[in-house]
Amino acid sequence: MKNVGELVSATARAPTMTLRCRMVQCLFASGLVLALGNISQAVVFNFENDFSKSVNTESSTWSYRWKDSFTRDGVYPLLPVFRTTWASMPYFPTWGPGPIDIQAYPMIGVNDSGAPIYDPVLDPGGLWPWPDGQSDLHPGAVTGTGQDAFAVVSWLSPLSGTVNIEMRITKLDGRGGNGVEYHVDKGSAAGNLVSGTIPYNGDTGFFWIFDVPVSVGDRLNFIIGPNGNDAYNDSTRMFIGIVPEPASLALLALGGTVALLGRKAVNASVHLHVNHQHPGSSRKHLLMARSRGGKSGAPRRPHWCQ
Figure: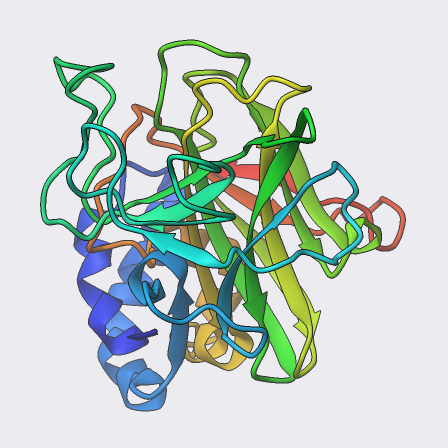
């Protein structure tokens, strides 16, 4: 978990924006000092920063799970084994269903080595490395079942209120395959917040899911699955940042003008990922907002701020 006060410097590195977005960014910067007194204790949950190599339990705030079917019912067993090596790679930190030479997939890990990790046999040129500080979720065939499986990162809410979620999903292995599917569910598929697919070399760019109500004990499940029934080359980075609404409101406590110009544009100038590398050439930020004209509970529609 990161203190929101540590994220202030992100404003200086925001991408090129429209005039409307720039106006909000300037207002944000000018009022930030006033707001800091209120947000200094606000909590941000960051999957990659919070990743644990030793703790994975039912009561963990973040847990690492799997499903040996494509049923998104909210029931996902814990990945029971943490592995530190794999084949020709002397360090490969991942949770999995069994020993890596017997049951490698699905796997979930974060590279904390301080350097990119790559396979010197399959990728001797290091063209598709696992970047330092980033996660790797890989769905895959479950030994003995002939069926591919979901990799699931689950967040157990320690609070009751409203949260905003920032995400980015990037394929790490672009050597082939047919891409991956992703889902964000509150509980099960019945509580779906967003779903989609990306191709073998795809990248969603950063996007937000706003105004998600949670109660203590609720689960938000972040799922990577094979696109169809093909899990080859499916290593995928999933950035997840969760901000409880009081923190977001404190960031926006800069006066009525900012509020009128739009909370989403303010959020476009401040990101939770200031300590990470992010591959991909897109300079757009996909802001996911609740559709005003759609059915209640319908998936969010995108709004772009450039």
